[in-house]
Amino acid sequence: MIVEERDVSSMSPQSLARMMDLDERIGELWRPGELAAILEHQLSAPVELDFSYLGEEASQRVRALSSVRGPQIRSFGDLLHHPHPPIELLELTKQFAKDCRKRPDGPLPGEIATVLYYASIVAAITKCGRRISKLDHQSLRYALDWALEQAWLDEKTRELLREGYRAVDTAGPETDV
Image (cartoon, rainbow, N blue to C red; front, side, top):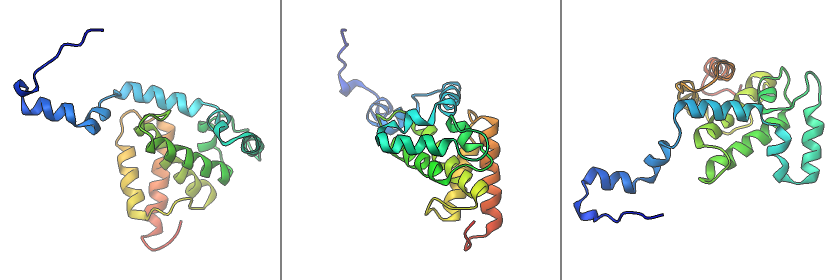
């Protein structure tokens, strides 16, 4: 592949800034329709597959937790929308999403990992009555505001995040949910 060389001294300041601002360029990698498709894929992905990096013992634990009370949990969508999801699986999901967010070369775009991260926190609050995060209420509300503004968010996850927002909002700043 032949790449044309350009004299950077002839480039506009805006072009140079765009070239050097990797964070801005990363944010432009995915269009809303693509993010919607990636989220849909991730929510239908088998939980066992993404947790296989934890090793065989942990994979067996995930399989056991996935078949506890209520409907079987096969995917992340099943987990997040389960009436009584296992708290341990929500914690693993939160950690998986956090790890994905930290890695620019991770398996998920940052936006998708962020939604998965907050959705697992909210599912723990709304469905288990437990907090799995040290985030204060204000920070969680701010994050949920961001997530709810995303046009590519599916309606079922959007409703889960709204429920979480209401739960945190009614709990007040000093109490645990």
